[in-house]
Length: 286
Length: 309
Image (cartoon, rainbow over the protein chains, first blue to last red):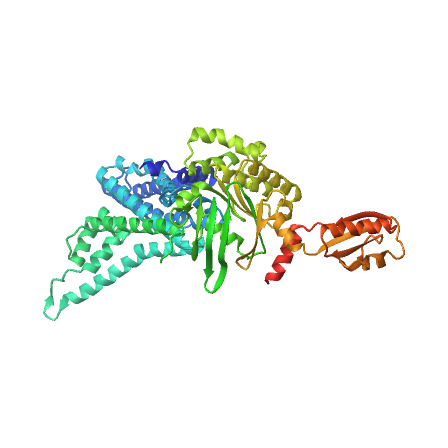
């Protein structure tokens, strides 16, 4: 922990990031957008219903929509913040000097990762007061709220680590960004599409000449559901979707555990590769 | 202090470095001369632990860079030929960041930074953003950065490239100060003739091979089998050229640009040179000056690399 917090790269990056007016403008516009959305939603709901109050069930819909907005934000901003962390140093010709210092590769990589995700965490935290408006109208338990934020953080960490890894492996920032966005789209869109495809195939296969039969457990479908952030969030916010996923996969292992295992492993592996490949290995293979 | 043994770097079939051997004592200022692509930067990158050698070993203060690169990093200060700076970081913050990167406590950094800025004449730029400094100032700041952990060895890859004459002179003065501080300095430069007075040894590298190594005087002496002597007269005298032509050690007599003198190649010893001058004066030739042309390092470099092509 001391290595992480006593980290010159982390402090330098934070200083540079928050010295730039872009960061404050980003937070301002994000909060404006969230406020517009929340108050717009409340206004539209109350005016369309012709009531002057907001029901707990509507509050739950608002919570669901906000959770998905946060997830979208995390998925689309994290690659942009991390995929250039190392490659941009290389392009700006500051990396060689940094690598001749006494800092360990672990310090440099974690410093870059945490400084990038710190901005995202700040965005999310800054939006909390607006987000917590849903508590005013009921329908949401603090546990639901905590669960969503915990999994958002796990997702930020994993996608950020993937971005840092590609930034270390690939020399050019633009290529690194494309590959990281590609990975993110694979995890969040392609896996969902494949899951839906398998669902259709399962449903089609369950109809036989004599009528409907119980489908056999599908590990692949379960894995696809477990790595897809949108499906995980949908299962959190709608028990019906969790039931539908179980119906298709027939695997009783909770997908949130699978999600945690997969994304923690992805984080560890990505960081390991980035740390190993940051500096040249001076030892020659005999 | 620095021992390079059989250092080789290959890119496919191309030898960027070919069996480089070099030993430098502590406190030596070593000038590395070579054309672009000769292998200077490759050598420096390997020494700075930024590039893996194909073969050979480098020991800095007895530590093998292959075995303990992290220990070597503490002993060296590296300044690359091209480098960037961080936007929106002030000069003192720039040094503070690198000081922290070397694990120097904050209290010490606070004392060190003003001293380093003073050394490189940038005290007045302490609170200026680094990316707004001139190129010469950035070079000096980068040099200060490479000194922040008080390294024993400085590896400076073309520190004066792209600088105007004033900035070059300032850089040279700083390097002289560092020499006086007892640092072991490896420096590559296209303006090595200007730095000749501060280099204890020079090495000439061509196509990855060290083709000459020694003190500046030694390298120059290698070329001086034949000297060029220029003689100027108060007024041209008939028969003067014939007099010099008769000397067995003189050849290739040519008039100088000034039209009141001649230059010629001389193969004799220093005693023969003295005798020639005595006889010329005895012969009544009105000699205004009689001098040996000093061969500068550029001539040395051109001569040596011509043979190696």
